[in-house]
Structure formats: structure tokens, C-alpha cells
Amino acid sequence: MAKKEELSGRDSLLEMLDSLVYHVNMERIWFNILCITSIFIAPISLFFTIFMMLHSGILRLMFRFDFPLGLVTMAYFIINLIVATLWLAVGLKEFRFLSRWNYRFKRYFSLKEQLDKELQREFGG
Image (cartoon, rainbow, N blue to C red; front, side, top):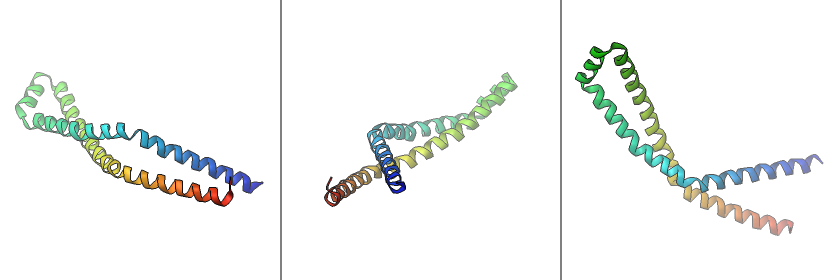
């Protein structure tokens, strides 16, 4: 009885993993769009922020006009640099992963079909 429950648990786990793999493959286009936008938009954000920070006249004017506003602006620039850098790093990492995904998925799918055929032959179901 325990063996049957264990096999049924494995089957449900394998089915769950299969559905996850198929879902990721179906959503691959959206992941690619997200990666590509992060690869293009993050550098623009980095460039703009660095440009604004290097032009001391803008920051001096902000601090002279309203000191708390200058501090908030400086904090915004720093947060923007950190977030844009992370966004770029994640986008590049995921792009590399997704560029290899097609090959891996095709290989997984062919191995799964081959295993299913062998199990079908062996257990005759």
C-alpha cells in the first residue's frame, strides 16, 4: 500500500514538474521581452542618472533652492543607480538562461517521449 502511494506521489510530482516546464516554455516569449527591455532601458536609466549626478550645477541648484529636496533628489539618484544596475544584471543573466532554453526544452521533451515509449512497451498500458 505504501509503495502505491509513493508511486502516486512521484507521478503527481513528475506531472507538476512537467506542467511547470511547459508553462515556462509557453511564457518564454514574455520572459524574452522582459529581458530585452531590461537590457535596453536599464543602461538608459544609468546613463541619465550618472549624467545628472556629474553635472554639479544641477545638484548645486537643487541644494540651494531647497536643501531637503536636494537630499531627496540625491537619494533618488543613488536608489536609481542601484536598481538599474540590478535590473541590468538580472536581465543579462536571464537572457543567457533563456537563450539556452530552446535546446534544453527540445532535449527534455525528446527524452521524456522516449521514456514514455519505453515505459509503455514495458508495462503495456
